[in-house]
Length: 293
Ligand SMILES: [Zn+2]
Image (tube, rainbow, N blue to C red; front, side, top):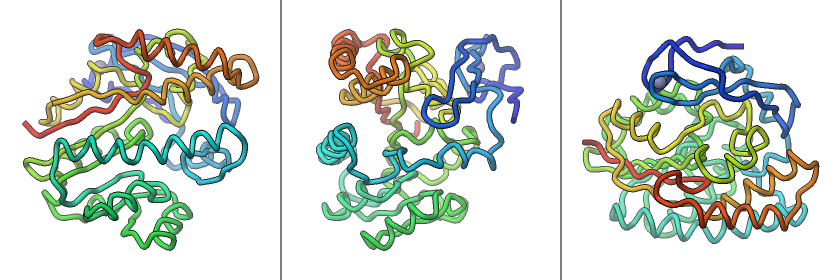
C-alpha cells in the first residue's frame, strides 16, 4: 500500500479520517478515505501501489470498460451511453469549433469513433492493452498507452476530455501538469467526475457507489476541482450536470447496501438527487469545463 503524506490538491500534511468503505464491486477489502484539514479534499489513503491497482479492475463486470449487454442493467446502461454521446458532442461544440480532440481513458473508443464521424480529428489514450486493441481494430482509431502523454507535442489539442477518469489517475498533480502542457492556449479541458457532495452520496454514505474504492483515488467536490484547476493555471468556466449518473450510481449503491438492485428506491433517490442538487452541492456527477487563464 502507498501512504500519501501530502494532500494531492493543496499539499497540506494534516488529514482526518472521513470514511471507511469496502470494495463492494470486486475484492471486498476495506479502504479508508481521509479529509484534508486545510482544503477539505477527500482522497483514498492509504491506497494500493500504482502497479498493484490493475488487479482491482479485473472483472468482466466492469461495464464502463466493456460493451457486454448482459442483463437489464447493462442494457439500459448501453442505451443511455448511446444517447449521451450526442449530448457530449453538443456540449463540447458550444465551447469549441471542430478541431483535434484527445480523449484520455477512451476505453473501447465509442466516443472518439462518434466524434470522428462528426468531423473531429481524434486521438485516444487507454492504459488497458486489451481495451486499447479493441478500439484500434474495431474503429481504426489512433489510441496509445498512457506513456504517450509524455511524447505528444506541446499545445497539441483543442479539446482534451476525461470522462470519469481523473479520479483513477495515480499521479494527479503530474497529470494536471501534463494537461496544461498539451492543451492549446485557447483549448477546452473537459473533466467529468463523481461529486461526493451530492444528495445520493450523503444518503448512501459508505455504500455510495461513487466512492468505488479503491479504484477511485480521489473524491471531488466543486470547490476541490476549482482549487485544483487554479493551482495549475486553469479556471472552471462552466459546471454541467450528468443527470443519468444519479440513477446509475443509486442503483449500484442499492446493491451494495441491500444486496440487490432495487430499481424503485434507486429511481426515487436518483430523482431526488437531481431535484435537490441545486447550485450549491451539485448533481451526482459533474462535468467541469476548464480553460487556461
Ligand atoms: Zn488539501
